[in-house]
Amino acid sequence: MSDEGFEDGWQVDGRCTNCDVARQLAPGLIGEVDGRSVVLRQPQDQAEARQLHAAAHACPTRSIHPPAGPLDPALDPFPLALDDTVHLCGHNSRHTAGANSYLLRRPDGTRMMVDTPRWSAALATRYEGLGPVTDVLLTHRDHAAHGRRYADRFGARLWIHEGDLDAAPDADRVLRGTDPVEIAEGVLALPFPGHTRGSVLYLADQRYCFSGDSLYWSRTTADIEVVDNVTWYSIEELAASLARTTDLLHFEWLLPGHGDRRRLPAEDITRRLRDLTARTRELQPRAVDFTAMRW
Image (cartoon, rainbow, N blue to C red):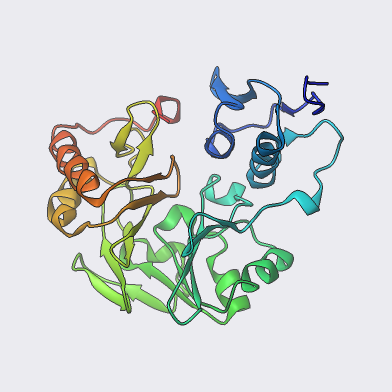
């Protein structure tokens, strides 16, 4: 028992795949040791206990265990509001390598889902509770696993780029080429080949960038980075995508599939993206190496 009366005993089991989700939600409580997450210390107050419960409910392998046994559904915080417009879906899926997904509110009260959590009818009902979902936006092939099921449940349109169409061949809307496309009022799709041939960034309201696996915030470097150690298509094309679109990327929130989220002033984001464009231009192709992630 901790000094404040919170039970000790939180732990991470050996199924952890080092996806980083728990460390994003419970920083300082869960950390990385030898390529997997571990509990660094037990919670000392109610806020820290809530962070650990969020991490446990999001974990795609269900590797995080509270001291009292099974997780309490009443302590599931998802969908979790990041602000008044975006919710984090939680309940990350093993079939998308533990990727984060989001719900984006539009002015008429409808929502767009960006990538998907694990599939369950109960979760779909929970997400629908925020408002009707009109579109499911896939950032790339790695995150397509549950797109059709969620789209069908919601009666929504499923979007993907032609470069990754084989991962969602029954998509309702197919983005083509590399030109930006306004897919709804205030929502822009920017094709961004590199991580995969059909990667896409979705920009909303000049505030939010849903970046899939193309860009993320690294706690290691304290900067915006590309995942050059896991580039399935072409690091050269990723550099070209950055060069082509950096001047169009005006936003405050960076919301990736993998890697940490970050909110910064838009001018700071712009400066960092220009620096990233220059750094990425110098990168050389390398073998895929999951152990080299700079979380």
